[in-house]
Length: 432
Image (tube, rainbow, N blue to C red):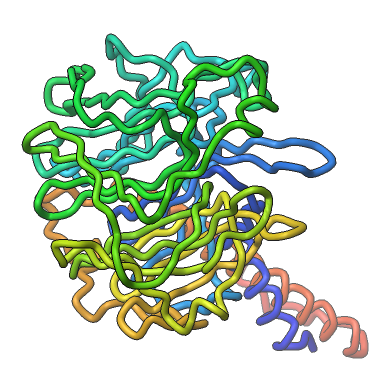
């Protein structure tokens, strides 16, 4: 008789192969929170035997608990990016939570693998899983940037690098403030002449409830233009963590805030930051002058008139990463991919922003409303329906196939085991 354990094993293997996806580690990728999902896309594998870029979209379902070292990734079917991209910025619209804007970054054609900046702004529709190039005037290529969006749907992008490719022989750093109005699809540059910060890139940006954008870390290069990569790296400075750059979106004015008191925080680049609901910015990771930034985790209190840094005790146990991303959801800062000392990171790290501790288990917020409970006359996710239907059909078909094969094998074995007794036909027993 066929082992029931074998049947269960086959079914489990089939279901896992359908549901789960194992994304490759990377740096310079994008990650956003949309419809209770952590969506990750883009990035590239750096300093490996062969450079590789990515265009698939993967996600973790945040309505389900998971372990930081054992989580389930899912592939977004038909959601591939139209270009390879890294060190770009991705922003969820505040006017339509179905929309993601992808702006800037180093870009390669997915067919030729050549650098391609023919389209600089793309829009992704979550419900249709479709990317659309937007015809926007006055946009110039910018890399190593981070954008933020206000409640009125205006995206702010500061500075960045304009370079033909990542190993470029020449390029320019900027200190201008460009804005993109998602309602009118108008791109423009603000005319600001006072208190301009130095040309910068690889910073992080957080917009506070009062409309102030706080920029932390990154490279500064007063010359702006560099003729080769070595000149930029050797002569560039790292932005001080004792002088915080702030941009007032209501007044379109720059200001600098000197941080006095509190703990000392070293400069850094390729780090991350998230803003908590109570006005604290959590800074994590990054490096400076080819060594890990110290401390690896720090917290900036923006509730005071004079900002103050604090280093929690858990900073000592923090991993070292750069080129990663961090997103805030519920009580957790969720850190994905990036690179440590010698290799690309494959783990997810979870930081409890309430207790300031690193944890290994993610528990969904109690107040989450899943999309399956949304009335049918609202914008229910087509992607969710298609994925559920595809998974259901795939699992059902696989289970049925396994059951049929198992039954066939079972009866075949029974038939072979029974003695073959000849059948005696008696005349007159047939109706015909």
